[in-house]
Amino acid sequence: MDLNVVSICTALALCCLLPLDVYANPPLPQEKPLPGLGNSQFIEGVDVPAIKPATLQEEPLAGPDDSGRKASAGETSTPATCDIPGAAFEQLTPMQVQGDQDDEDCGIAVPVNLSGLRGEDAEVTFPMKATLSCGFATSLTAWVIEDVLPIAQAQFGKPVSEFLTGPGYQCRRRNNLPDGKLSEHALGKAIDIVAFRLSDGTEISVEKDWARNTQSGSFLSAIHKAACKRFTTVLGPDADPNHKSHFHLDIGCHGKSCNYIICQ
Image (tube, rainbow, N blue to C red; front, top):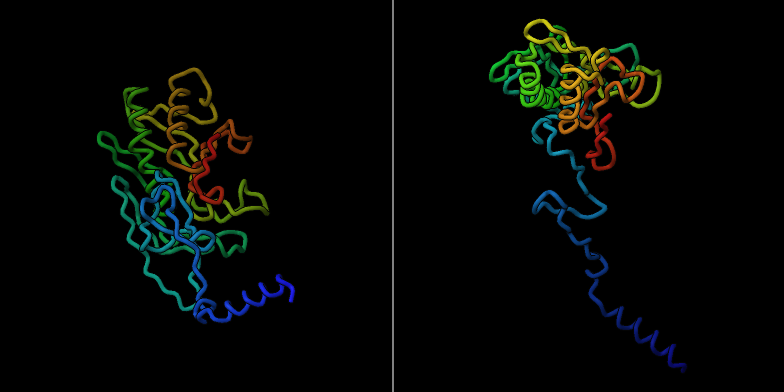
């Protein structure tokens, strides 16, 4: 008999002697540490979790998702209590579709009506109350109290007293187009800021004062730069014609890991 044939037959015979549980329980993929999350483990290709920027503040993982996702059949959840130190707001009941188009993805699970903020030495009001998700309102509050108010005090020697904004939540597509991706406004995770008013009544307009060699222009540039460290999307007059009159801020997910930043 040919030597190769003998070798093959011998190998087959040995395989048949292996315990049956070797076939019933094949080895699992080895767990590997996930960079940036300490000792957390994952099975590669099976349950790799998304990573969000550390600066973004969403609801606790144990609470409900405030993205507007509808509960599946048999699933129940109790809305979390929103807690935002320094913010004046009214917590609303969970919101579903409220818009001209029939889009079932619109809504906020933990919505708030943000009416004002209080820093150490200043109070800021929102003349048009902004309806936002609790998570986004938390990020917005941190930016205003920790960045905007100190920058205004350094630039003008007086605080910002009013934010002139859009309503926040709107069930619509990006840039109000009839199709395309859903806007972060439709999830309560975005706001448009048109102008700021100082305590002496001075108004700083994004459209009129942006890129000017003035105190107001310097202020807008500084807070825009600071916003890029807290939000995943920051769009201003340099971004495109759709944003020539306002800053757009949101915490939408960009890229597979959700940590890609758009700052324009």
